[in-house]
Length: 427
Image (cartoon, one colour):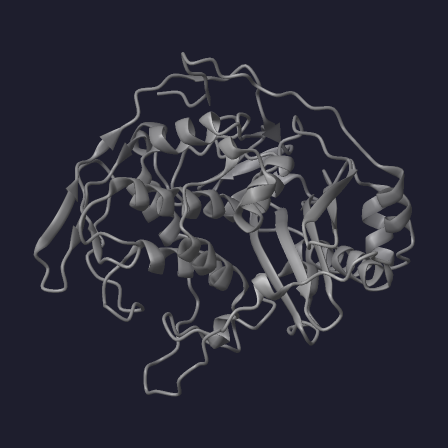
């Protein structure tokens, strides 16, 4: 079955944007003299660069006001969102748990995945979890801390393709589509999702969710292709890679979902997720906690260093964040795209802002060849972008000093035990 963008009978409207660039952000970016950074700006079209810098100002009651500044932001210019889609899946999964109202079922309840259709796989246990079982909470930890892929696929299976897209579209995120797991499956196989059960510690059944199928039609009027060729297995196909049926999330949508996560009262009510105070606190912790602070999973702190999934503070030389800085974010990287949606807090200097950006680094124009310019261009550029905005924010005058205590979190401390560390995950 051919994958297309969703169009539902309740009246979905598709938003078509125009490229936007604000002079303030353009001038700010022009101050950075780093040669890699300047080269990307000179060829920003080729790199499909999009940036949203969000200034946050507080009033005397500490109420925030958000001002967005744009650089080449265009909802019609496709970029692959990669792992950034794990954020809306985490939010939807927490919301679903709350809506289920099943006695004994919480985000911490053990769950097991069965198989009922082609290519589906079982997952009954998780040795990286303290309980030894998957749970919504543990899936979110793994998806946020180092951006593991399997937890995303399991949240996709828990939610179901139809529910994911209908809910996001109903909330106003209309130009978004989430159509597949992060494993090789056909469009038809991705329409089918696994049976899931929640269990007691003794493995007796609490709740069983049957397998689901999405019958909704899609609309492929907007075709998204990229590159001059791509690999299918070992064969080079001399045609652009077709992203038309793949995941899609415009940069403004990603930024708005992050805002809805951290500042839910600042977005329209229909765009807020049905989360509890504890849910928000949980998400905030694992979006900003370092892998080396975490006990379950016990990630290898050398491989998964503090800035591992913090692109605006990470390059080959910088593996630690400045003193007092925490970043609440979600990154993604795939097909030569690097994307980061971040809320940065500097408790020492009383600074806060949001920064969301995507860049495409694939000089040979071939996709699926694992030859992308991530190390030489992508990561250095994102670091320089992050530092440009951070240094600007350190000197920007504010009428009122923000009270950032809401974002102060008591993070875990790694316990020195005999368990081996987790290395080389699929992300």
